[in-house]
Image (tube, rainbow, N blue to C red):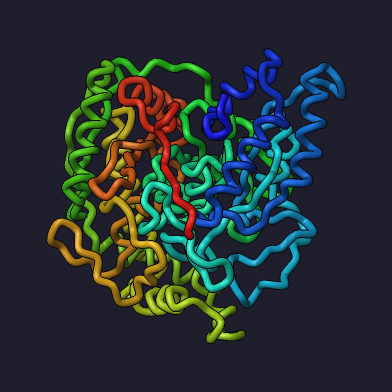
Length: 480
């Protein structure tokens, strides 16, 4: 098998080949590293390469598949790229900011801890925007991360490096985090699968583990691979008293036939790009072809209400953390970070945190009513196929189907499900735009009903296979 095909091998297939001894963890890791060495100069998804340590662990994994040292674990020998925001004790913890370029972590994030304990090979750490505060990925510290499908576009953010690495074939699995769509947006832009677990399902670290908008979760190229990683990450952790127990594992196979799902191509008054809308309808039709009952519905949300409630939350919980950095050295911040802080100060338009909670409660109530008669909700992940790479979006006006947005991030249809944080949400590929970048579909489940969203995603993957099969992956041309 050619190195490039090996680099795109699904994790579940690789594990089966490891067990059958037709592939070794060292061979897979070498193929992934070789792919990274070819395309990373163009994509720029990694902040740190840990190839030497990973190769040492790959040799240990080989021994485990030969029956030594207790045998193989759940992720034994699989390359996993972890988001730089998820700390590793003794390594950099910069949040993508020049202000923190010399900062060293003193503890390891529970997500990284669980990946390593399950035998995953942490071979790289992935880029984010500064303080993970925007929906694209570039920074003065790390430069511009680009979408492997079209280098003129961003892979999204804030887990943009994770999405780009999966699309580029430079990792087998990846970890992300999501405070407003930061797993789902890159999954959509890069044509991969990203899961925002319900609040508390996957442990995090203080203080943001206490924020119901915040979620850690898995990213992969297939639904089964996402299940594999999610089942490693799930469950309570002593460092996170908000993490839920007992651990809930996604079952391997649940039929979606006969399920009833609601379809909202245009959620509330949110405009949607015609290509995104067409791909959303096509994906919904594929589910109908698989025996799922699909009914189009209307949602009552408005952009104005969503924006005020979201900014009331960010201005209270997230903004003050970033503002401390601004006070220390404002000239070192990226322009988009300063714009984020300006939005925190002006975006709520007088809405208090408590008033924002009242609007969130209305979203919860509308979803609860919807889920009385439906098993899940389908809607686009984002209103646009992708954002431009390297654009600060401080003065760029984003127009969607003839409607000018007040702030570029209104194009993300993800924040309502950070507000309704107990709902599990998967973003899966829905097709491609004319620019060559993928588009995404969100599958939203009832509170803590993870199994249903994965069953629907698996049914869609079977009836409408997305990219990354042999010969179906981005052709990345490194810069001259």
